[in-house]
Image 1 (cartoon, helix red, strand yellow):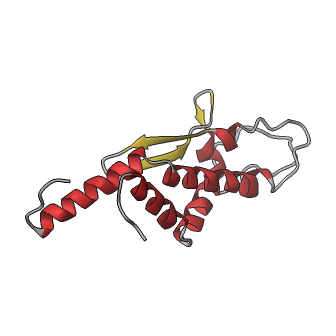
Image 2: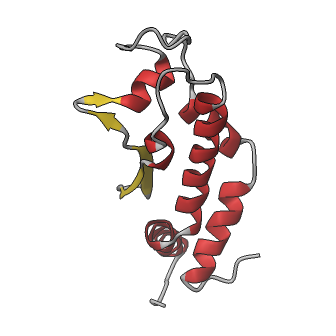
Length: 140
C-alpha cells in the first residue's frame, strides 16, 4: 500500500482499487450477466410461444464485458448479420420478420428491466464487496 498523505490521496487510492476490483473481478460481471440472462428468459422468450422457428438461445448467451474509464460496460452482443438484435427487441423497432404469430413491433425491454432490477436490489453491492475482498479490502 502506498504512503497516503491526505484525504485526496486516500480517495484516489480507494477509487483506483475499486476500479481494479471491478475490472479484474468476476462477481459484479457475473451478477449483471446472470440478471440479463434472466430477463431474456422472462421478458423476451417467455412472452410468446414460437410456432415457426426454433430459438437458438443466442440472445441469452451473447454477453460481453469491456473495461471503461469508469469501470466496466456489460452488454449483449447478439447480431444477425449487420443487425444489432438487442436494440430491435429492446425498443421494438426495425423488425423485419412477420408471420410468427407475435406482434414483433412490441418492445420487450429486457435490458431496461435488468437494470431496474439491479438498481432496486443489493445484488451489485454484495457482488462488489466480494470483488473488493478479492483485491484485499476487508469489507463488511
